[in-house]
Length: 309
Length: 309
Image (cartoon, rainbow over all chains, first blue to last red; front, side, top):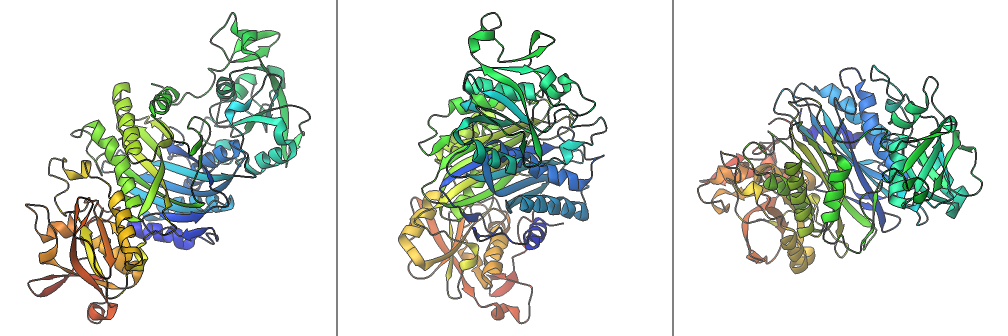
């Protein structure tokens, strides 16, 4: 299998790359015409054995997750996806039909969210033991100039999450982490409906405890979560909801009325933003606390720590 | 070693990310203010055992090459680099000092070319045998609206290359492929000096034969190269110059006077663009031909074929 043929197959299969693409993939770089000179960018990865188990996962689901994981970052900023670039390193024994199926799944997923695949690189491992790795770069633009950052939370905000949390990765490797919908539409609807009243947002990839910790850290506040209010997936307890990770739901802070639903997705109030001093005096390390049966427990260390797991 | 700490180290060490960065790395996405809504993007990879040999290569050189390889694509379009995003998968036994040295080298290289690192992802392999892989996405903007594509060559153009070709990768893995300068300044100078008279360009990564083939294919022309005129590296013959690859010099087609030098880099005329029919009648498969001692030989199959080597 040859890289040029394979990339040719991907690009030819693209239904419509859209008017915004001035130089399509196939040159040294692709060129886009954006609606605005403001550009958002992020990169994310899938590695066999770490984020996905190729031996037990349909290759279509692998390709889909590679793209949706990165699009969840676009949702977290309440931005509009524009384009994606993909780089994969394939095991020696990856055959051509599997590779085509993988790339077709990535292309179709990217197009489904209006962010066509505009660049790609394919390499093959030299050694038989080299595992599948895939990086996806997402490009996006702010809508109406504003995006939501982690650093915007204010004391007095309520804390909300979309959907249900916990149990996304089943013991056999299957589960919602392979089939979730990035909450792009919901994030844009939130920005539309709340305007300046929504202050900060993150997507839940590492786990609610740790991700709420990123908001708290970057906003220099503390966050209190009420265990009984966490909308857990059936069969999960509050610990799973706080720590399992890979939910790809949104967590945001806002003031005033917040709708119960964004599109078809429920929204739940789970806590509040408080001053650092409230918990900081006697437990200076903590930023996020959960109240369980009247007791407080530090939870910003709950969840997935990159590079240690 | 933790991803957040490591990325924090990288971003904190950034001397000046520049005024164009509205949201610095550390959120779900970074945000840039571009000078123009036209954006170029490409992704490239380095894989241990394929593009680089970690066992025998200083880690600083690995980090540098990861970035410069991708910047060579920016040069190939005669574009201005804007920012880079990096995703790495590290072997289990990669220690923290080595990882910091790697990222420092990538950051410093990116800053040297005015395209700061605005996003990163770090993962560790689960299995002991998983090799180092690294993908770099480069973002760029066109200067004064125009970029050079592979598809612009006209019959009657002369064909030029910068620098010398061949022998970039020595048998022990060292060589110029670890230390080359992406020809960004030279490409911009070329566009300035020749204006509309320069018609197409590519950077020489796969080898002159194959890369000239990309120009020929995408421009629907044929290219004739004169073996005795190829500026080969001392110790190399014309076959090395055509086929070794990893030169990261520029190959372009133009009409009229072309300077002998771009900056400090020599420019050499090596051939011409001709009609497809000239060679196509009896050898319909070929697009690039080299004349050696009066005989013609097809060479667009010379060089590095991705996915087969």
